[in-house]
Length: 478
Image (cartoon, rainbow, N blue to C red; front, side, top):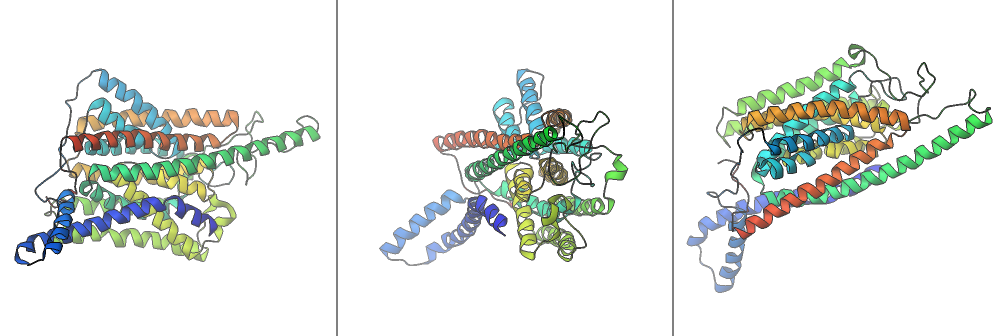
């Protein structure tokens, strides 16, 4: 459980912030009630002073008739902004898809600074781009096998355990996105991303060192066997048999037909969760906000997601299922580990829905900490992200949070970029023999996202303070 303890420390700050926001929301609700009854109560001078201070805080955080959100949708026309945005989006989707994080941390600043969208509309369009990049990447990966084990490069058991909980978290995160003020999102984002990017970079350094040692050992074995005789070759990742092409070089990934490579039972269960969530979202759109029916439909998502994850968890605990890509540790999973995996799935979804990012920003570093190879981490995280991002797009569309023409344009850009990025990086990895390149791309993407999103958020926050705009919680039921 030492590894799990380390992962908990990594994201402890984020959990504390989310919990604090929840307490703040409850506090604001309670203070609002006190405010209405204040005229009927008799207080002494000291009590009145303290109550006034509390009411000032409450008024700052919550005014039912005030809103700090007004969407800004620039008119779509062919100009330098849309060309520059397409170029930035292309590279963001390329690197984001390779790292398994989607690229939302690059998309959102591009959409706000270059095109001119407001931050929440940019968040929604970012999800559309992440969906396009994820679909393209999954299509590319569906025919690939694991680099060292005889299994698909996508670990279906791992994604089936975490993905339903991720989608539940997405629904919660989208609600928080509507409820929370921009500055709250900015604080969470900066703390979370700096910690995760640092941890991912250190993991990349360790992987690079390990690869260097393996290369030297393989070269020494070839020397001992007569300058490249029948000695063992360097393997891109340890843990499985070498796979050589006809030319005798080491090939990291083998291609097969898509039909042979898909685990249809697991894929069907994931589709069932997606369809169930979609039905809830569409039905909810025809109910009044915050009505009894509205909340009942929301809570119906819980048994669906928990039920499917519990089914997979029981299989992993009893040994009927295994997380094969995790090696031996994937065959001996304890209840505590299963609970932590599911918790991080929910957390990844909340962060993804709240910030408009792919859940891969949490899932990819988590998979690396579990010992999953970088190529498998990328493929598995993106596969899960395809379901969660597409569901977020549906939710944002029903909330009318983005203009469709812009969304379609950037979806096309992200789809093409992701496919090209996957192919180029795969060739580079085969040429250099270093899968750690994926980890460095992941860490760099998260770090750049922290700087860009954090910078934009701080500038917006300072501007609102100078203009004396409302900066409290939004009314979810308005």
